[in-house]
Image (cartoon, rainbow, N blue to C red; front, side, top):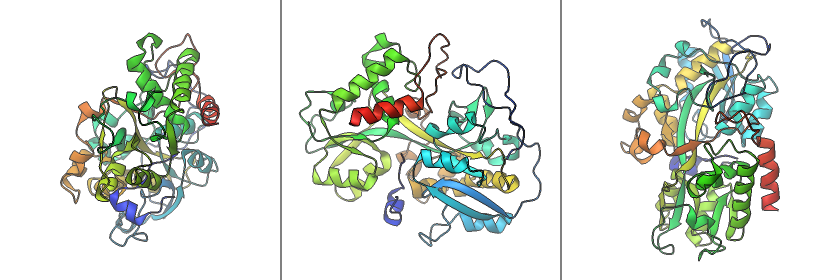
Length: 399
């Protein structure tokens, strides 16, 4: 699964350590992470001399050195300042990222929330010492110490950026303007065959968000912590939705084309897709529905056995520095993680467009988090469905 680049990246991209042992740790899990006890790994207490290189796994558009667009380059200044040569392997999915990091050949990764807990649980990545990352101080508080980037209050990386999964519609077809996800889940939808949905197991969480509002009897507290009954309700809703879905999308260019042609008229999307579609004269608008939405916040994490931990830490500090963070957020199409980055974007309205400083807006966003058997909402009397179960269910839903 994966998002895309920004309006700028759309034109430029086709889009396709911490050291220590692995002795199990002990102690009570933190609220919201009940039962999840990661391997005992330590973060460095000080940095040494850079090793001369750093090997990264990243999403396309996150590590730009001017080779895709000569005007887009935040890697070269980093190399010049630190002496750390950047080598990057671009991954197309979270599953690919997890597999690459498990080879032990990479120092750091830009993990999404549906991969980060898998990396932590396997001991592939280690806690980070944020005191060694000066720019961490200016990261929005709303992104720190969250279930997808920390465990039991211990940070496992630095937030890169964030965004919400929105509801988009063609204004010349869908009337009145929707404000609820009901428009994509209604089995009697007048837009049958022209509804689109995101093609990923994590989309089960979108159904769960809707059920949190419409089926309070289910008691869903987190769309990523679903017991058997709650999970079945989400699966049933998506089975029902299948009757009206015309296309499941994962390629953002195809979704844009579908909305331009009218093959799709309503469905889930990202703000950057809205921006690109509008720039290509598609009559679309988007909204964060009243029920809330899922979303994403990526985290730069350091390999537990990084060969170049000093350069990795320098990269983590660099990528969330105001200038670099502004550049990548604008190029990729997301809200930056560093509050000071908003003053550095070329478009003075970038942070307004992507709601970077609007915590009330993001309070309605349930960031992607890896579902695990230990319920992430704090329950200990039931077992929740893990990501493998989500994947199996999604395969069956799509047929």
